[in-house]
Amino acid sequence: MKLPLKNNNYSHLQVVFFINICVCLLVLLFFMKLTTSWQNFQHKFLDRDLIVTRELNSSSSRINYLLNEKWKCQNEMPYLILLVISRPSERTARQIIRQTWGGISRVKVTYLKRYFEVKITHMFMLGRSHDVEQEDIELESRVNKDIVQQDFMDTYRNLTLKTMMALQWLNNFCPQAVYAMKVDSDVFLNVQNLVRKVLRPELPRRHNYLTGYYMENFAPVRDRRSKWYVSEDVYAPKVYPPFCSGTGYFFSTDLTSKIIDIAPNVTYIELEDVFVSLCLKKIGIEPQAPPQPKLFNNFLVPYTPCAYHQIVTSHGLSPNQLLLYWTGVFQNLLEC
Image (cartoon, rainbow, N blue to C red; front, side):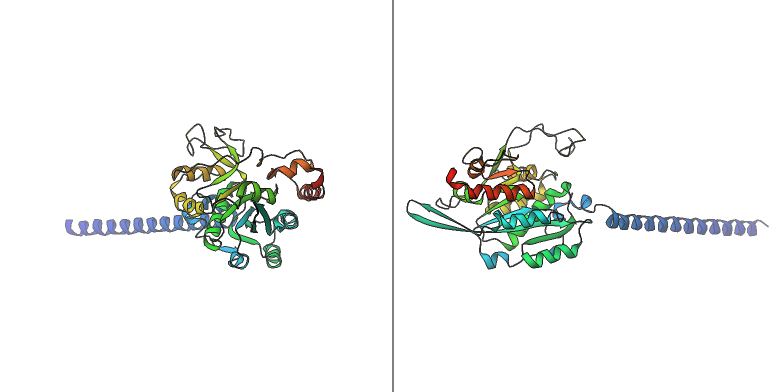
């Protein structure tokens, strides 16, 4: 009688064990399905770039181009390229830029009876947006051939990602340019002054050079309500290294590959101008103050034709202001 009892107990344990295994498998399958569903939800509905931006290794080089102009620089052979940071919704601003400073393709300089001509082109750098039909952007691109767009959400928090995209494009598709300027789309840019007072083609080519509205001894903003907020976990030091305002800075293109190469080893920070300065610090290069004070401005300079005739940048203009100020400056040259 004991032997059959043992067999019955053994069979009972087998059944219980089998049921437990089945339950565990079902639970595992449930969580796998739940995880997959959550990932699909993230990619479909959330700002996918808040995931992407933390990994610069998967940013500029791995995200697909939605729009590209691979042959832009081969066709135009620029000495200076303007990389304009723009959002998909800023179509009017882009059109005004094309009519004003973005429409300048050459600047002539005479120095000590020597004649120089600087060839210039521009490109608009865009991410994608839920608020603008992609077909409209594609049409604008076909007409103007000056838009580069990659597949990430175009948000303020992704400005570092967009800047790295611009540098990657410059490195891959416009390596023959000697100088470049990263500039926002709400900026008045006096291209003539940029060439004559900053680029200065009569001088030997500069290396490891970046200048703009020079900022030093600026402390990180710890107020969570600010769009410039940076936590101590992201950046612990009390002061940023010197940097040039992201509203518009000018640089020698030999810096491009150096920044790209070092970027994955630098702590990601959403303030793109600070991030670029952190990259430069890592490779032992410092931004420079501009050759003359008040050339670059990260604020809206009070308008007079003569004031705007002297500067390189003024920041915070509406498209209508840009068109109005541009027209006023170049209609009143004799008064200055």
